[in-house]
Image 1 (spheres, helix red, strand yellow):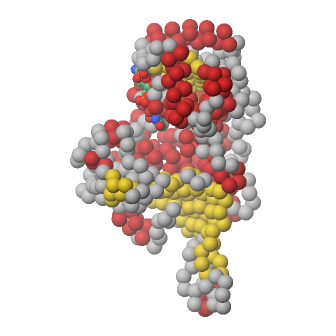
Image 2 (cartoon, protein in one colour):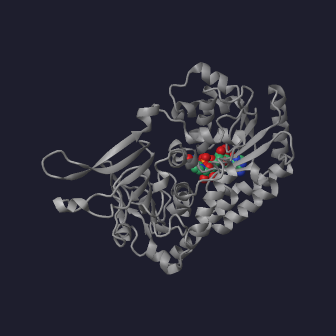
Image 3 (cartoon, protein in one colour):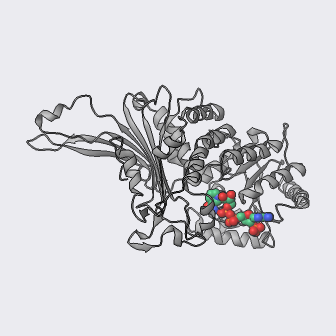
Length: 500
Ligand SMILES: NC(=O)c1ccc[n+]([C@@H]2O[C@H](COP(=O)([O-])OP(=O)(O)OC[C@H]3O[C@@H](n4cnc5c(N)ncnc54)[C@H](OP(=O)(O)O)[C@@H]3O)[C@@H](O)[C@H]2O)c1
């Protein structure tokens, strides 16, 4: 990965430079990189959108965004002024080829003035339906070099397709213009410090990896729970649902990092080769197995953090009879030598009791219950919990003797918290990922085969769910841990979900 690599000065063009993602994540991340002097002084950032007047109005808009979304506040005026001098605006439509030839001229002028060598990073922060046309226009306007010299790269946001067929089509469109090494499919979960720490924990330490297999692990739980509802994204959610929005990308990425074999080297292809192998080892499921091993849910009204909230069907831009899932749980089996027989239980949902993303490795119990003789009938299994967000850290749960004359065993926890050890403000995922893309390091980005392999498992689920519409939606109250059927999914195997 990138830490020791020097940074080429480059021009970054953000298509969708006026949008929510740019204001909330991209510009704040770039500002932080600027503040930490990680960007060469000449690097330029050009926002591309239809609405906007000039560099000055764009800068004012981004200044307001930073006041709200900068990681470290307040934003000092001197820091803002130096950052603002990097920011430019280009008014254009994504669908008009002439706008791209004009953009080329404008970039040429900016690069000449700033002494930039012509390296270009295109960020597609635009509606997914526009990706194809932008890629085509970039190609036709001669923006993409495939030979040595200045580099050109493209970052593509999620959602990456809505099923296997559309993901393949999108990959095809991209590959008509860009070579695979120039394409950076972003999954911001991979930029999170705690996600990156999964491999460090496993492979940078001697004590965990020997236990990391079917001999010692009983099962794994991966949870991505949100307490918020769909907010103002009802329209998007009606199209997507939690399976596409969270499980296909973030959850399967976490699964890959937990389950993969040690790569032969810490480089982009070696790491991604191992992740793809995990996806290929997931046991395909028949329609019947899918219905048995997956659970869908949709929230009804309820209370979150003491506040009454409406059900999904009453959210803005949502069909009052909607069948869209806001919760999904799925039991996955990885059929390889390391994991055969160890179920991975995945779950994600909105309007759950609290916001938490965690991976829990639950270990097998000791082979004999020695302390039964002195009255300890049941012991909590050991668990290693990797907390991805919030309250990032790692906890190891084990049994300890309660002081006193009788033998009583209680679960205790050894807890490592990032904030206590490394300070409260961790870099945002986008900071890391933008730097990696500028460095040309794609380790933390999804490769084409990886994305398609993930869709190969998720698409049958979508199809089976579509052909078997749920009869019980809404089936969980907002502010709870999801539908009863999800509890039953684990209870059937004699297990239960953790209460994070
Ligand atoms: N927002 C997030 O937190 C988030 C998180 C993860 C992924 N994403 C992904 O990031 C992408 C952007 O999301 P967003 O939330 O930022 O969307 P958004 O707020 O709707 O912004 C869309 C941007 O695209 C521009 N645009 C749309 N059509 C255009 C056209 N024909 N010509 C020129 N510009 C056009 C818009 O500018 P004008 O209307 O001014 O032209 C605007 O800047 C999507 O793929 C989304 O799925 C977003």
